[in-house]
Amino acid sequence: MSAPQVARVREALIDLDDPPQGPGWNHDLVAEWIDSAPLVPAAVLVGVRDGGEENVLFTRRQARLAHHAGQVAFPGGRMDADDVDLVDTALRETEEEIGLPRSAIEPLGFLEPLETVSGFCVTPVVARVAADAPPLRPSADEVAEVFEVPLAFLLDPANMRSYMAEHRGRRHRMSEFLFDGHRIWGATAGMWFNLLQRMGVA
Image 1 (cartoon, rainbow, N blue to C red):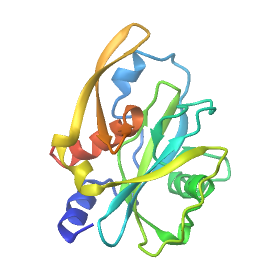
Image 2 (tube, one colour):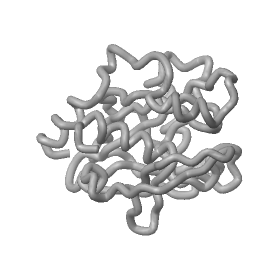
Image 3 (tube, rainbow, N blue to C red):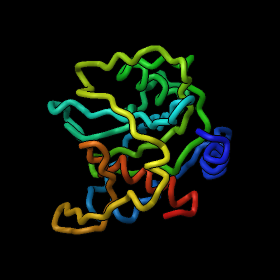
């Protein structure tokens, strides 16, 4: 990221020393769509490569997975009992899913949690990924593909499109990005939309 982009993104994040608490920023919407069962804590890594053209890392999930099969996602997953905190969850899951070691990741801060219709409360951890990070090794059991999208593209609200989603008979306007044949939508686009909102550009 260029220095101005780093400053803009970092200023919008929740500090690492003050992890977000409580319901997701989209709680009122999701509460209309799902049952009242407790949500499962989870975390994802919103990783941005340093050096050259800064790119954001995404995965495409395997089609046979139980949740969000075949969708574009940030690497991450549910919190395990052995995880120290949600940053630990995001780092562990990222290493398991795409082979990116903790030593190559510098967490910068949090976005607000997002609730999903599949029953998770997901906290995004925004981080820098070292330019000299080792080659990625996606887990064939979970990840069909890893790809990257330029940060500049995702920070431009002109590249964000709207669509109508329906769940259990209720419709709501959602956001998506289309890049190089990939559709970034659902919870993943919602997390990025939250960043753009916090930056004051959406």
